[in-house]
Each structure stands twice: as structure tokens, then as C-alpha cells.
Length: 161
Image (tube, rainbow, N blue to C red; front, side):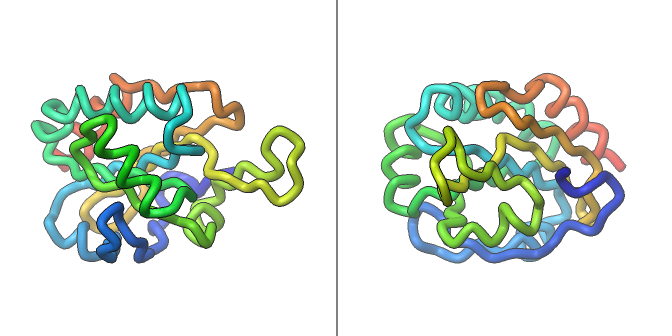
């Protein structure tokens, strides 16, 4: 089970698609809620649709005063190509060591029955400016997409508090 609402979000530092470190606590210092999108893999059909949908809804998330960070276990190099190919307008973070997906308990273990093939489950966390988890959505089925409108509505509420 992913971390519950009301839990302090574990801090982490991951490399983005440009090999620059991004630390959650530093992003939170901007005083905005952070929408963490965990996704299984770059260049897969559902992940491409999901991240492109969030790209297309960024104006609404910006209006909600929210920062978006997307995390997968792909390498920074694959994430850079994925970001460029889809013109994504938010950072993609590489959890290639699979540390953060463990911290947030969103490990999709042995995907497709392949031993040790561990990816991120599709999940969304919204963390308030104090670093507390205020919203969680996840799926054990990587084919399920998040409820986009609900995520935006929750980000708006959390951004106003």
C-alpha cells in the first residue's frame, strides 16, 4: 500500500533528464504543492498518454499553483529523449536505483512475471507546502490512468490551504 494521506512525505534527491539533481524539500521551499507522478516506463503507450495529458493540463495545474515532478526507473538519458519526443513541460526524474519507489511503496515487482523486473506503479501523490501527503491515487494495474480532473481539483484545494 502506498503511503497514506497525512504522512510526512519522504525527502529524496534524484537526477532529472538533464542530469541535474532535484530534491523534493528544495522544490517545496517554493511554497507550492507538489504533484508527484510515478509512472512505469517511458515510451510505453499508457505512460505516454498519461504524461501528455498532464502536459496538456499544465495550465490548470499552474493556475492551482502546483509543481509537477514525474518519476520512473528509466535512465536520465531515456527520460530526456521521452521528454523531447513528447514536448513535456515538467521535470522527469530518474529513480534508476529504485530507492524512491520503495520509499513511497509503489514498486510494481516482477512485472509480467519477469523476476527482478521492478518498475514504479502508476501513482499520484500531492504533497502540501509543509511536506505532508494530502492526496494519494495508485493502481496495481499499469493500464489504469489516474483521474486527471480529480488530481487537478485536489491540487487546487491543497494549493489554496
